[in-house]
Picture (cartoon, chains in turn brown, yellow):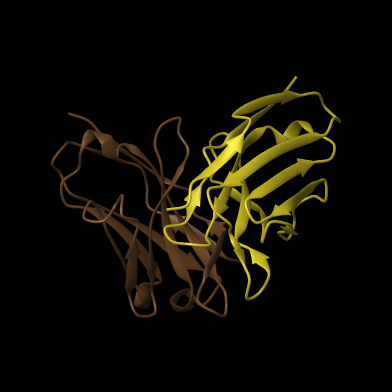
Length: 123
Length: 113
């Protein structure tokens, strides 16, 4: 059974750093891209970026480039999303999801999702 | 970037009735090389992560009830629920991955009338 299990909820102050995780199981983790998706309170879904655990190739949405760092460690089947200096506007639910990519390398859809990590940033 | 626009933003439908949700992309998301539309639909129930319902515009994900169907091509797409059930109350999102960054529609909230 494919599973993505995310780390628990976090409460941080502005300016603090944070790294959240997403551990995959039930499939060959290094060979599937992992995407990160943000959902701000009461809002829709936003594509942040993706990482390929096999070689750590990372691609960011322009809206999130420079704001977060996405990484992966294939030895422990885990992807990460981190901030060096949190802002109140980073308060959101963050989801990781497995990205289906076709034979041509084109992104297709997100077939399995983690349960989400709620990040609250408040002074 | 491709912008995805859903309509309506919300709707209330009686149990057993047909539901139609529309999604329009700012440009075609049909890949001519394989004739596939890179359009997916997701369902998000309160307090839960999104769940994949349909991909390539009309292919149903394993385990999804057959009352859910998708249609459309190019720039205009539709999610249809043939007979609304109580458990279908959720927000529905379309998503394109024809070009990066992938992008989602704003969501359509479905309630029971």
